[in-house]
Length: 185
Ligand code: HQG
Image (cartoon, rainbow, N blue to C red; front, side, top):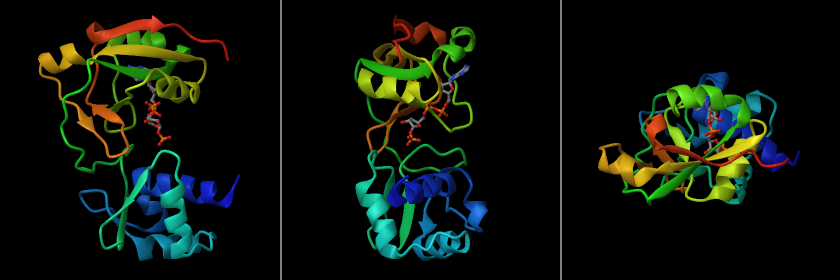
């Protein structure tokens, strides 16, 4: 694995899920102190400089991380399991959104709809390709079409993260269409 990818995976872990791994705290909006991140990572054997962190932020394929304006703080743009508010604005969704999952979860999803599992939100994407690759991370991919327009009309709220991920609390079965069956691997 390239160094920058290894660094960014570790950053995802501490900035979204386990800041305590390196003795760090996130503020209520998910921000961490950049110097603390660097020294914490180095104590775990990383040997990173501010330039490495900047590189990981700049080259990240999904634009997962953001610096504060003064570049003293850093946070993940979405994807947290710990209770933080990344201030993704409430936004009216497009009429359809997509969720990629794996075939093995479908029985449970047909019973209880989409629920956030270990994260704070259910993650949805605006396009089918992205959803398919998200689903593939878990197994044989299935793409679900979500009737976001009806959800919005029924009072469900949607938030759009700065890197284009649509977030919502849950998606009841009623709004899920299994349009795209499992595709061949
Ligand atoms: C499934 C990546 C059983 C859900 C992506 C998913 C995304 C259920 C899995 C972000 C269920 C949770 C999030 C139910 C949902 N019963 N399974 N009732 N409801 N599930 O990783 O959406 O690369 O927490 O379908 O781009 O896969 O990390 O969520 O398969 O935006 O930046 O439970 O992670 O971003 O898995 O992925 P996850 P996700 P990053």
